[in-house]
Amino acid sequence: MRTWAVAICILIATLLLVRSWLSHAPTIEKTRHTDDRRDDPDYPYGNCKKPRKTEKDVFTGLGTLEYCEGNHGLAFTWEPRGEKGERFVLEVPSTERWPKDFPDWAHGRRDEILGNIKRITSARGWNFEFRDY
Image: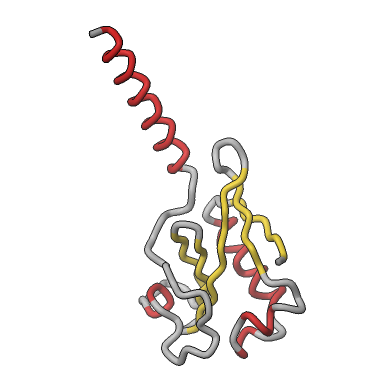
């Protein structure tokens, strides 16, 4: 009987630890997309078509960040860093890859768009770092 009590205590402690870690992650919303949507006339899906308070915004999902500007959107992947998930690394196309990976409206605007993402996420208390691929 004592073994069961110890096992239950360990389980509860583990669940509380996971819950604590998740509370430091960005808000999770559904933003799953296909990998290549540059030529899709119906892109963006989901969050960029929802009414927003601002012209430019970001939405996060499980490993995905969607940048919205008007009715346009770009999707990036992110992963947590640090012991408590207090930092996040956002995978972004290099300057050379940017025009190949994203639609025409985003061409030549890499620094501006990444600056907008940094400004918006910092205002929400999220610490995103960029890593080129």
